Amino acid sequence: MSLHALPHPAALLRADELTVVHHDDTVSRFTDVTYSRSRAGLSVWTAGGDEKAFPSHEILTTHVCLAHPPLAA
Figure 1 (cartoon, one colour):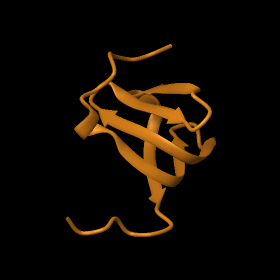
Figure 2 (cartoon, one colour; figure 1 turned 45 degrees about the vertical axis):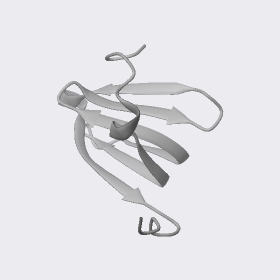
Figure 3 (cartoon, helix red, strand yellow; figure 1 turned 90 degrees about the vertical axis):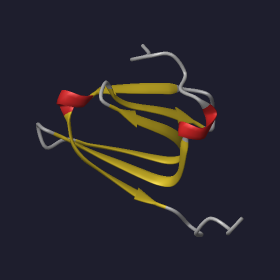
Figure 4 (tube, rainbow, N blue to C red; figure 1 turned 30 degrees about the vertical axis):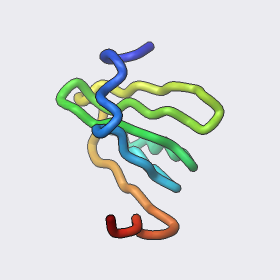
């Protein structure tokens, strides 16, 4: 279930590892994902094409890890 329409491509972020800590202290972990965070919540797209959506009221914090920093333009 999608929280909103696919955001503008510039709004998509990449993560080698994405950890979502929920208000009930559960943790969701993803690897190799594209994600977008907005007031509505967090949308995560996996390399396999799956989409996960988390409403903002369920998210306590997120942690992102990149294997390599992005190259300068």
